[in-house]
Amino acid sequence: MADIIQLLPEYLANQIAAGEVVQRPASVVKELLENAVDAGATQIQLIVKDAGKQLVQVVDNGSGMSATDARMSLERHATSKIRTTEDLFRIRTLGFRGEALASIAAVAQVEIRTKLRQQDTGTQILVEGSQVVKQQPTAAPDGTSISVKNLFYNVPARRNFLKSNAVEMRHILDEFQHVALSKSNVSFSLYQNDLEVFNLPAGKLSQRVVQLLGNSYKEQLALVEEVTPFISVKGYIGKPASAKKSRGDQFFFVNGRFIRSAYLNHAVLAAYEGLLPKETHPFYVLFLELDPKTIDINVHPTKTEIKFEDEKTVYAIMRAAVKQALGLHNMAPSLDFES
Ligand code: ADP
Ligand code: MG
Image (cartoon, rainbow, N blue to C red; front, side, top):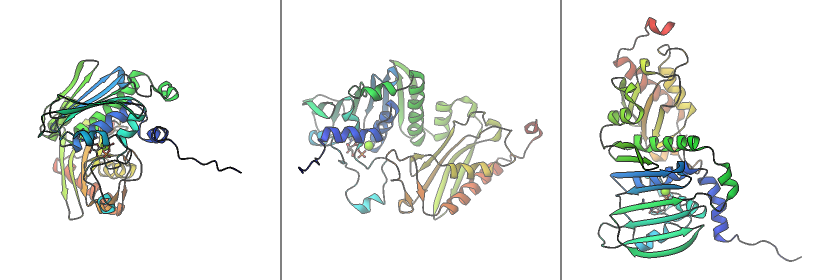
């Protein structure tokens, strides 16, 4: 019998890998915004057209890339963020897998314009379905602009699977919120079909919360601050009166990264016990910092799940921190809540 096993061509391997990283326009938004943050940008602009189906563009004033790096950034498993196994256990950046740009470029038409601050000329690269169709020196501002056009143009099944613009835009806003909340010291703007939706100046977290999530949180935020040698928990929780029927405004960040955790959510709710009106959900934006050695964020390619080495202690400290914040603000249950 003849041998039949072959290595997949690179574009096909990328296309398959892309399925895990790039589910929808919002996945592109997340990856590009995170790259801009990792590049140390102080100003980040997100531009979307047709709920990201036509265009997702992120413009940053971060480090920029050399011509060689700009080309390398599109290779799979190519990253500037880790080099050794040890690095994997002390990750401080949002990215590290080196597969986002390769995955995105496999399923879209991508333009990179980038320039290092110390250089006079920048680089332009055009890629379509993993094929570089153009690379040339160009004039460009310091930093990087990456445009992702016609997502899934070459994967019709995926393109057809996309939801309505309203739904896709909701997912994009979620990703924008996560990154904008995690970095209140960075200014962010969002343009949707040429209209400015958000323009958030760099400032305090409490200001960012109100500008991003609405005036209903004004005067309603209680400071959380609990620092132990093992973990630090900081941020804000909403006073019980600001609790909402919808569950949306709840955010955990672990070492700067947005994560979902039913377990931690339970710890927060336990602290609110007896204080919330029926069927309402409290606001929280909480930042946990702990030794990266004691967590594992490599659970899923989109990195929104996390494993704690010492889950129980994290739970206890979290609940205590929120309780204390509520106590400091003297939130005894009131009769209003009984109705
Ligand atoms: P990762 O972020 O996991 O390293 P990516 O595929 O997202 O992988 O990016 C690959 C590399 O390209 C990054 O490690 C970084 O060096 C570079 N890069 C990507 N986006 C930017 C940006 N906006 N500014 C500067 N460098 C960038
Ligand atoms: Mg990345």
